[in-house]
Amino acid sequence: MEKSKSKQHIWNNKDYVKILISTFMLYFSFMLLMPLLPLYLKDTFNADKDIIGIVLSGYTLACLIIRPFSGYIVDYFPRKTVLLICNFFFFAFFTSYLVAGSITVFAIFRTLHGFPYGATTVATSTVAVDVLPPHMRAKGIGYYGLSNNLAMATGPTIALYLLHLTDSYTALFWLSLICSFIGLALEYTIKVNPITDEVDSTIESNTEIVTDIQTKRRRKKLLVIWRKVFLTKGWSESISIMCFAFAYGIMSTYAAIYGKEELGITQGAGTFFILLAAGLMISRLTGTKALSKGAITKNASKGVVISSLGYVLFASLHNHFGYYASAFIIGLGNGLMYPAFQTMFINLASHKQRGTANSTILSSWDMGLGTGVLLGGVLAESVNYTYALWAACLSYVIGTAFYFIYVKSHFIRNKLR
Image: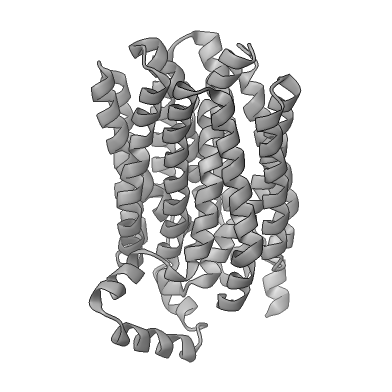
């Protein structure tokens, strides 16, 4: 049996490959707009930095509202059906950017777009785990993370290049619409075997099942509901993730406009995201094998330390070298950190809470990301970009310190597998 398992290859799983490509398209279509929107709002509506932060943080609020319920829905309803419905509305909302005639209307559409985006990301990450056999899931999570992080890095790069080439925001809105449709079409062809849930649930110990039932009986109804929408065992991991996401929100949203206004980089901002993508790819490809062998905390430890150094460089060295070098270093660190943390959440949850585990890490990331986008804009407008960059650096260092002081040992004590 073990020999036959070893001969299986993750890339022979057609449904997994499809979900990887569709996930890339999902994140790519969304991330195309991330560095463009601050420039778009400034050029089209003459918006100030603090207004830009408020407008762009609206989608995060929507994500935070919908994601806990998305995890519950994904766990209790057919996952493919949920995925297709959510992704259809995600695709449809891209048309709203083409018709928004004022900053108020744009802010409303951007906020509403956060609902299907938040729900779709929960559904895709859960289906990606479902289509793989248990012995491939650690490796699968690593490659899944590579697909969305690669999109997060290459999307802004391509967007800035195309904007320089075409000088048209409308063309990029159309490109996002087309890419999201491709992802939706691919997801329609994915086969999710409903028997997977039953087979996988048999590997959970009777002790876990009994303990879960007893816990639900002891606690009040409100607490039971809370556990269905939030993975309570992952509370400490969530705090660290929020700190990391706060830093990433400032960096990814304001890197292009910071480079243009403070460093005079008018055509090279795309290189920042290319280097970020290169770092992500290198660390993902080298770290996935270690992750599949159980080196979860080892990868997480390396990742947070490396990224912390990158943010220190980003905040302290205000020249071209610091700008570009920090992108590569942060990419290296995040490529190790995020899949390790996602595996932590999955390993802290029972099978029936897999959707909840995914929604918890994504909700935590969005909470930090949105706060970073909002406060980063406020700091840049009221003081300058230097303060915003140091706020990002401080947040990441705090998250790293908390990880080593508590999170690492907490995970080791509470993991289920």
